[in-house]
Image 1 (cartoon, rainbow, N blue to C red):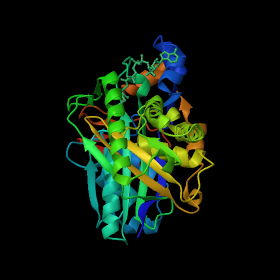
Image 2: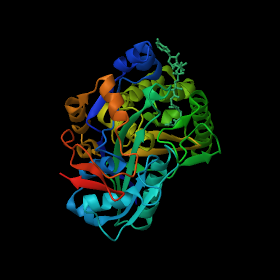
Image 3: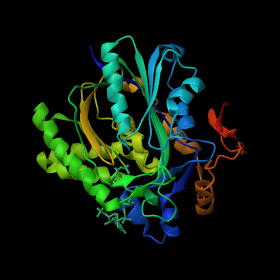
Image 4: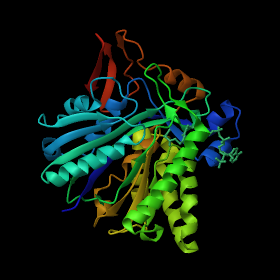
Length: 387
Ligand code: CAA
């Protein structure tokens, strides 16, 4: 029996920042951001959204009533959770009207935990083929105003439904993974922004990728030739490009061109959303599936997942017949058409406007038309609404 991704969906907030505007404001050459970093726009989180509402907004768009009843596990991957105790999955279960007889759990290991969630889902469905598992990877990447990491911020959520006989892609049993205690990026409990050693983190990412790719090839007797595309965790899209370039010399020039074309398709959406931490690799997978017209059923895609701190994993997926029919292909183009561009001043104000204290507060709801919103805080309880 094959197990894998049956449905995928995405949500990002309705506001964005143009990286050319940010470059001008920070006294940088726009080409540094556009080419050197590989980002053109960045999703900005309004106070009325958080990882819970973004996750609910993403999943809601793909779930039928039957799915809601059949889901036996809700796995919520994030490194920007809203509570140190209660999982985001429990809030999502209620907001979406999901099966009460389900396990709910939140996972954390920087940008990596969405991949663990996906593998846990695969293993559960392998043992319980009638079950469906909802995996949500939802995050807000925050480094702070006027920091080196500012250009690599972003926000959004990817939702995936894992089932037997999936319609998008099977998850192959070929994973290799590794972890090491490394201080390249972390966020202490007292901080709302990440602490990062930027250059070091990029080097660790590449080192993990190269070591795991060697190991993957040895373990699975496969090489780059066996894949139509390589999808990467994209904290900024130049990062994946650097990793891909590290291994391209292993194949012929024509294969290099094909893999580069696939990489370009896989970063179309990430360039306009920014870093999604846990969801970045899966937004990139969505971007590939929706923007690479040369892909076909039966094609194998490799994926490198990386989370600072640090943990990495490589595995592959196989595309299923007519996978295009299940993709919500208008979701991201529509989002890009509808979202509002912010001035630098408006972005800076929004950056500092979130709920960060325990004081009761009612948020201004006039500018958020998403289905699930955060309306404020009462008696230290976040107030969510379906509208
Ligand atoms: N035209 C074209 N390119 C230009 C340019 C111009 N005018 N000016 C500069 N560049 C290029 C530089 O040559 C450089 O390219 P290379 O990396 O290929 O050498 C690139 O633009 C970036 O320039 P800098 O290295 O000078 O940039 P920076 O010092 O401002 O830092 C950064 C960049 C380290 C990514 C920083 O934004 C950062 O710390 N980001 C957050 C950390 C991060 O994302 N790390 C990734 C790995 S960790 C991970 O993956 C987990 C996670 O999600 C956080």
